[in-house]
Length: 132
Image 1: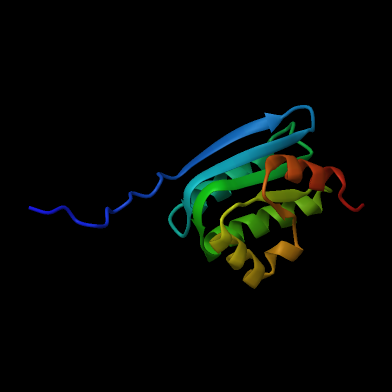
Image 2 (image 1 turned 60 degrees about the horizontal axis):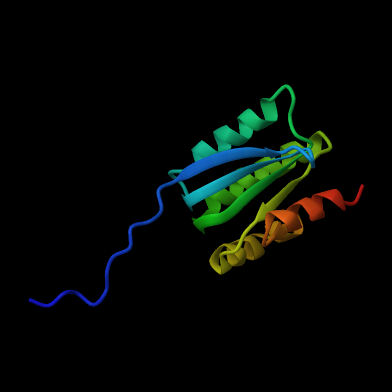
């Protein structure tokens, strides 16, 4: 019996991890898996919790380097967070290494609303050198 040529790869399970980059006063929310209609509500809730934190970090980085796919629901969650942060004088930066996600951000115009960079260090730099 022959084995199939193509093996189905299971998607990475969705997950969120948060850490604070104390030296920079920035929080990072790392997204794993796919950010879509089914998982975006969990990210929205985490972002809401971040906004409601009585001692929030100055700015926020959402690290999508472990995120294989972002749909319009995920983009909407990021856009809402960016607007809420901007309203209180803070900013959002996105770490993204997936060309498919980059294409979606560009088509939706999100790359003009907040920095989208390849590493956390670049995100910190972009937030540190933001225009005031």
